[in-house]
Length: 261
Length: 261
DNA sequence: CTCTGAATTTCGTGC
DNA sequence: GCACGAAGTTCAGAG
Image (cartoon, rainbow over all chains, first blue to last red; front, top):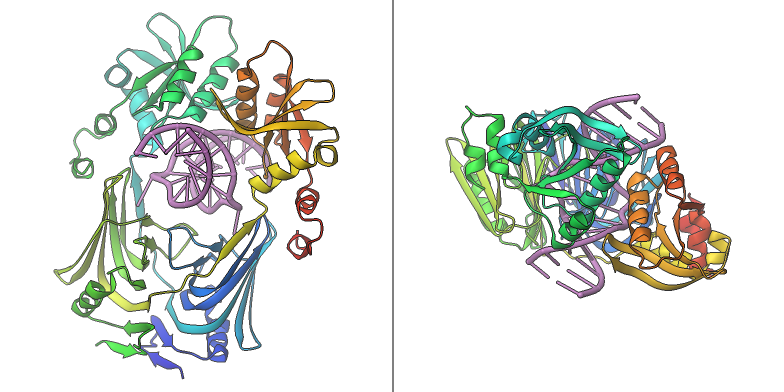
């Protein structure tokens, strides 16, 4: 039998609901006003860009106001199934099962969940969103390199373009070195691999000139295979210290974020 | 004041706990035995490979038996913060806040969460994991192409290698066409973009022969820019019908999964 | 361990 | 809307 606890205006919890009670609750809750959690024993089916099936097991279903649907199993960081947004939702009961269907228009896909038991249904109404900031992104690193080439690359390069379109894609940085050579820089904030070299190779090849074009891969590290590929293509690698790069961007700021590294 | 509901062997819910009650509960629950959900008003801080901060807002914290930690805000599919696995967890109360710290060894990173209110704490003990299958992956498509080149590519190609290492990376398929040309195939299950062309270009260039090597990009679609790049490099594109490809793999099976597409 | 590439990748930005 | 590339990407498979 269902037991309710603390169902006020802000949030609510109902534990051990019957299938019918859960369906009735969700009918109301899945209107986009609430961040809803359903825990129970469920199976799932996804059809769309791919297809997947999961058999009965303990699952955690999260439905957010924006229409994001996330189904977690007991293990792993990634959800078993999901829908980044939903255009239509159906709640029903059939043969002792709570069935939920989440449809998406583009791309066309559907996620079906069937629960034989529901441990609890919990929700928070009109949840408030805090602010969120992220630091130490590739954008930050690229900006640091563009502003401080001498400190980070060991030479003076005057950069004149960022994120410029070429037939092969968008290159990070374009500049001219002390001898007047065109320099194309590809920046990675993680260890560079072969795909990074392929990117740089394409951008260098695309540059419309007969003159020598230098290609420099800038990253905190590079894999052996990537380095071999890079050298065979006549490209260069410059190791960059992330702490140094990020500290160059905000010289006055406290470095608490970096101390941990 | 805390209200408990249905705390039996399998799962439990406590709503409106005090900060101290929540801390006491989590102290016991975060031992790897349970799939735990905490809803409350929290802020977060992450430091490690990158760094991020979120201010107070309604959050949903999920901690799984394997040590995965996932912090969701009210919107979006992706969590604000996470830890794919945790090596050490700390629960404490300080100045009216519930503080949780999740540490990871490699890479070295830490996620700190501070909650001023806790709406509820809910858990499922020793959750059972169901089975999971995924269909219509790139592997499936590659196998279909390798087994049915005539139907899918419009010509007979005898494939003799898959996923072979080259200096530029690992190419999907190697074969010989009717005229004895080497053919390298790159398969994509989604629309092919420029990076797919760059992959193929590298593999073709790496093939150790003076003779002509054909490079074929096989995908359901290709972007305009990718097609231009592909053609400028003398490579080929073959459109493949995913339904057809997947049905070739399992001719006898029902096609319910594909009917939706 | 590292490396490589897929992923129902999602997400943001620019066109 | 498409397209391109980053992501604290995660994940699995191979070496």
